[in-house]
Length: 226
View 1: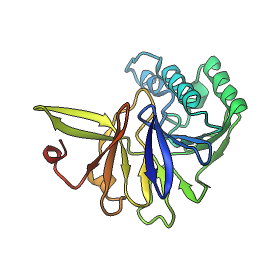
View 2 (view 1 turned 30 degrees about the horizontal axis):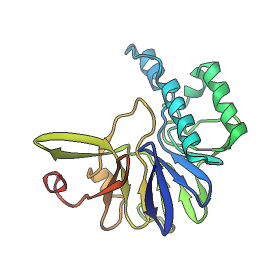
View 3 (view 1 turned 90 degrees about the horizontal axis):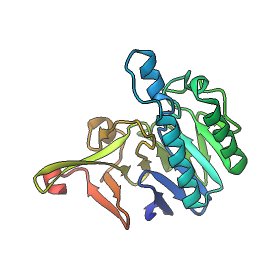
């Protein structure tokens, strides 16, 4: 776990893609995309059906590591609006067990906007915690600091003559976009216009290593970042 500051608050990055707020006892994750493999399987593309279990395993480890008392999932929790109905009953019971352990909050996203079953947690389109807005997709004119997901940001740099890509956070003064936490999720380059278009001045990509968080200026070229 490594420290990260945002909006005058001290956070901790857990497992390189989750964010823990000690002051609120809250763990944040984005874009779990449970049941993505089964969505593809229904369309004839057979993927190993283990993505939901792997993501839930990782989520439970992050809760253990952080000691959080609440869990906030920032949208696209399932890959589609029917994903919750396809979840294996044993995994559904594990999600319900999480809500008996910590307060679970499901922020809905564009993929799971019809999510009705909260597995013991609360479902909402947006929320505010400690003066920080929590939503799925960043708003370019947000009036308060916000945490969001949606874009699955990844940083791509040239390192020793080869291209290296890693999940990353994207930060500016009032916005922090989390990387995708799900085990079967792709990514969008952090300097893509879709991401930069919702960020304020001086956007940075934040990549967590085992010991520290590395900040990269997204207004520089990939070669200069390396």
